[in-house]
Image (tube, rainbow, N blue to C red; front, side, top):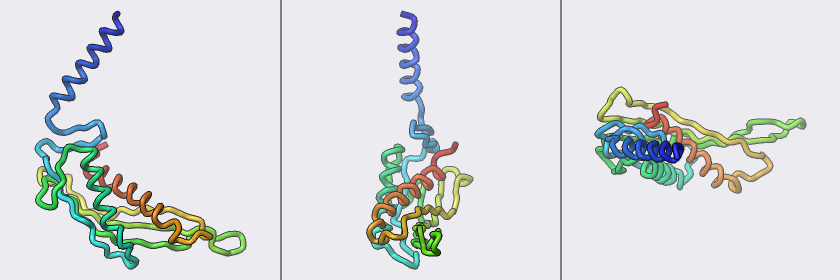
Length: 170
Protein backbone atom coordinates (compact mmCIF):
# COMPACT_ATOMS: atom_id res chain seq x y z
CA UNK A 1 0.00 0.00 0.00
CA UNK A 2 2.80 2.37 0.93
CA UNK A 3 4.68 1.71 -2.33
CA UNK A 4 1.51 2.36 -4.37
CA UNK A 5 1.05 5.68 -2.58
CA UNK A 6 4.69 6.63 -3.20
CA UNK A 7 4.45 5.73 -6.88
CA UNK A 8 1.22 7.69 -7.24
CA UNK A 9 2.69 10.69 -5.39
CA UNK A 10 5.83 10.63 -7.52
CA UNK A 11 3.80 10.38 -10.73
CA UNK A 12 1.59 13.26 -9.68
CA UNK A 13 4.59 15.39 -8.71
CA UNK A 14 6.26 14.65 -12.03
CA UNK A 15 3.10 15.57 -13.95
CA UNK A 16 2.72 18.84 -12.05
CA UNK A 17 6.37 19.78 -12.53
CA UNK A 18 6.41 18.97 -16.22
CA UNK A 19 3.20 20.88 -16.89
CA UNK A 20 4.31 23.93 -14.90
CA UNK A 21 7.64 24.35 -16.65
CA UNK A 22 7.40 27.39 -18.89
CA UNK A 23 10.39 27.15 -21.10
CA UNK A 24 13.65 25.76 -20.72
CA UNK A 25 13.94 22.01 -20.48
CA UNK A 26 12.81 19.00 -22.40
CA UNK A 27 13.41 15.34 -21.65
CA UNK A 28 15.66 15.11 -24.73
CA UNK A 29 18.25 17.22 -22.91
CA UNK A 30 17.59 20.37 -24.89
CA UNK A 31 17.68 23.56 -22.88
CA UNK A 32 15.67 26.13 -24.82
CA UNK A 33 15.82 29.68 -23.46
CA UNK A 34 12.52 30.90 -22.03
CA UNK A 35 10.76 33.00 -24.65
CA UNK A 36 12.36 31.19 -27.61
CA UNK A 37 9.60 30.09 -29.96
CA UNK A 38 11.30 29.86 -33.36
CA UNK A 39 14.47 28.57 -34.97
CA UNK A 40 15.45 29.86 -38.38
CA UNK A 41 17.37 27.41 -40.52
CA UNK A 42 18.42 27.52 -44.15
CA UNK A 43 20.13 25.01 -46.40
CA UNK A 44 23.91 24.95 -46.12
CA UNK A 45 25.53 26.03 -49.40
CA UNK A 46 28.19 23.59 -50.57
CA UNK A 47 31.65 25.14 -50.91
CA UNK A 48 33.64 21.90 -50.68
CA UNK A 49 36.04 21.12 -53.51
CA UNK A 50 34.08 17.94 -54.20
CA UNK A 51 30.33 18.46 -54.39
CA UNK A 52 27.74 15.86 -53.44
CA UNK A 53 24.58 17.29 -55.02
CA UNK A 54 22.27 15.92 -52.29
CA UNK A 55 24.35 16.80 -49.23
CA UNK A 56 23.07 20.33 -48.69
CA UNK A 57 19.43 19.21 -48.72
CA UNK A 58 20.17 16.19 -46.51
CA UNK A 59 21.90 18.39 -43.90
CA UNK A 60 18.96 20.79 -43.91
CA UNK A 61 16.28 18.09 -43.66
CA UNK A 62 18.05 16.10 -40.94
CA UNK A 63 18.83 19.18 -38.84
CA UNK A 64 15.29 20.50 -39.24
CA UNK A 65 13.83 17.12 -38.29
CA UNK A 66 16.04 16.93 -35.20
CA UNK A 67 14.92 20.35 -33.93
CA UNK A 68 11.25 19.67 -34.72
CA UNK A 69 11.22 16.29 -33.00
CA UNK A 70 13.33 17.15 -29.96
CA UNK A 71 12.23 20.71 -29.15
CA UNK A 72 9.04 22.75 -29.16
CA UNK A 73 10.57 25.32 -31.53
CA UNK A 74 8.83 26.19 -34.79
CA UNK A 75 11.37 26.02 -37.61
CA UNK A 76 11.23 28.97 -40.03
CA UNK A 77 13.34 30.26 -42.91
CA UNK A 78 14.33 33.58 -41.31
CA UNK A 79 14.28 35.81 -38.24
CA UNK A 80 14.05 33.06 -35.62
CA UNK A 81 14.72 33.60 -31.94
CA UNK A 82 17.51 31.07 -32.52
CA UNK A 83 19.28 31.11 -35.89
CA UNK A 84 21.48 28.53 -37.57
CA UNK A 85 23.33 29.22 -40.78
CA UNK A 86 26.21 27.29 -42.20
CA UNK A 87 28.12 25.99 -45.15
CA UNK A 88 29.66 22.73 -46.23
CA UNK A 89 33.40 23.30 -46.39
CA UNK A 90 34.82 19.81 -46.80
CA UNK A 91 33.89 16.55 -48.50
CA UNK A 92 36.86 14.31 -49.10
CA UNK A 93 38.24 10.82 -49.09
CA UNK A 94 41.91 9.96 -48.69
CA UNK A 95 44.11 7.04 -47.74
CA UNK A 96 44.26 6.50 -43.99
CA UNK A 97 46.20 3.26 -43.50
CA UNK A 98 48.60 1.08 -45.44
CA UNK A 99 48.73 -2.70 -45.48
CA UNK A 100 51.89 -4.70 -44.79
CA UNK A 101 52.55 -4.68 -48.55
CA UNK A 102 52.40 -0.87 -48.70
CA UNK A 103 49.03 -0.88 -50.42
CA UNK A 104 46.21 1.34 -49.16
CA UNK A 105 44.19 -0.70 -46.67
CA UNK A 106 41.64 1.87 -45.57
CA UNK A 107 40.40 5.22 -46.80
CA UNK A 108 39.00 7.99 -44.65
CA UNK A 109 35.88 9.85 -45.75
CA UNK A 110 35.37 13.24 -44.07
CA UNK A 111 32.60 15.86 -44.11
CA UNK A 112 33.19 19.30 -42.57
CA UNK A 113 30.64 22.05 -42.02
CA UNK A 114 31.05 25.56 -40.65
CA UNK A 115 28.11 26.71 -38.50
CA UNK A 116 27.06 30.07 -37.10
CA UNK A 117 24.52 30.01 -34.26
CA UNK A 118 22.81 33.18 -33.06
CA UNK A 119 20.64 33.29 -29.95
CA UNK A 120 18.78 36.62 -30.13
CA UNK A 121 17.64 36.18 -26.51
CA UNK A 122 21.08 35.38 -25.07
CA UNK A 123 24.00 36.61 -27.23
CA UNK A 124 26.48 34.93 -24.86
CA UNK A 125 25.29 31.60 -26.30
CA UNK A 126 26.26 32.59 -29.88
CA UNK A 127 29.02 30.60 -31.58
CA UNK A 128 30.75 30.10 -34.90
CA UNK A 129 32.47 26.75 -35.24
CA UNK A 130 33.51 24.07 -37.70
CA UNK A 131 32.27 20.52 -37.14
CA UNK A 132 33.91 17.55 -38.80
CA UNK A 133 33.14 13.84 -38.82
CA UNK A 134 34.84 10.97 -40.60
CA UNK A 135 34.55 7.26 -41.25
CA UNK A 136 37.22 4.82 -42.38
CA UNK A 137 36.24 2.23 -44.95
CA UNK A 138 37.97 -0.69 -46.66
CA UNK A 139 39.98 0.62 -49.60
CA UNK A 140 39.06 -2.42 -51.68
CA UNK A 141 35.48 -1.10 -51.78
CA UNK A 142 34.54 1.42 -54.44
CA UNK A 143 33.62 4.74 -52.79
CA UNK A 144 30.46 5.06 -54.87
CA UNK A 145 29.23 1.80 -53.34
CA UNK A 146 29.65 2.99 -49.73
CA UNK A 147 29.13 6.73 -50.15
CA UNK A 148 25.38 6.91 -49.47
CA UNK A 149 25.59 4.97 -46.21
CA UNK A 150 28.63 6.91 -45.02
CA UNK A 151 27.01 10.26 -45.85
CA UNK A 152 23.90 9.27 -43.89
CA UNK A 153 25.94 8.27 -40.82
CA UNK A 154 28.14 11.38 -40.88
CA UNK A 155 25.26 13.80 -41.45
CA UNK A 156 23.42 12.29 -38.47
CA UNK A 157 26.48 12.77 -36.28
CA UNK A 158 27.09 16.31 -37.54
CA UNK A 159 23.47 17.25 -36.85
CA UNK A 160 23.77 15.81 -33.33
CA UNK A 161 26.96 17.85 -32.78
CA UNK A 162 25.29 21.06 -33.97
CA UNK A 163 22.13 20.39 -31.96
CA UNK A 164 24.12 19.64 -28.81
CA UNK A 165 26.30 22.72 -29.15
CA UNK A 166 23.27 24.95 -29.79
CA UNK A 167 20.74 23.78 -27.22
CA UNK A 168 22.14 21.10 -24.91
CA UNK A 169 23.96 22.65 -22.00
CA UNK A 170 25.48 19.68 -20.17
